[in-house]
Length: 199
Ligand SMILES: C[S@@+](CC[C@H](N)C(=O)[O-])C[C@H]1O[C@@H](n2cnc3c(N)ncnc32)[C@H](O)[C@@H]1O
Image 1 (spheres, rainbow, N blue to C red):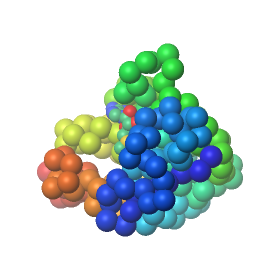
Image 2: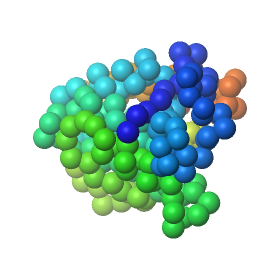
Image 3: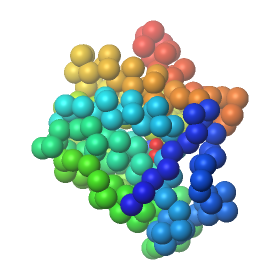
Image 4: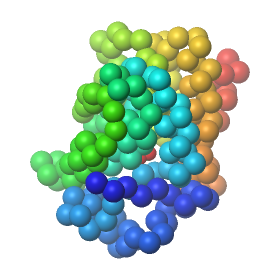
């Protein structure tokens, strides 16, 4: 399955596709458009680089599975990628086209084993007991939710990984499409910056 990324300025315009009129995931499921990533090509490459050599990876917020594809492209062949998303945004839960597109897209390429966890990150963390090599937080972008994810999941990262995680947050999740001015959301990177400073 093909996927499309945002343009270099982070705008949700996917050149060469009919995306503006085909936004619903049913269109991707029907093969009328590619799966849509919510990040740029540079961010995609950064995710892939960061995944290089990682064995246990966790992504919070999967959407149509494009960032998961980047992680699969970089991770170790015998690694495991845990994908956490409740897929709760579908109007018809039984059909859930976003989930179907994500599954098809993630299956379409990459390495390692994929484990799907269809829950909110705050639920999935209960009972979690594995060390994590790479944690990508891209679920609920509300400031308190980002902080909650960070506080709940970061204890599973080693100190060395914390550093690389922070860089990942800055380079990927803090990309232009998350800037306050564009979406009215606090940036993931500003939360990360505050937490790194011990706030
Ligand atoms: C920004 S999109 C993810 C984009 C994806 N990582 C990409 O780059 O292609 C956000 C996703 O997070 C999911 N989500 C929202 N709140 C969540 C939570 N508390 N835990 C896990 N996933 C959540 C939504 O269902 C949605 O699919």
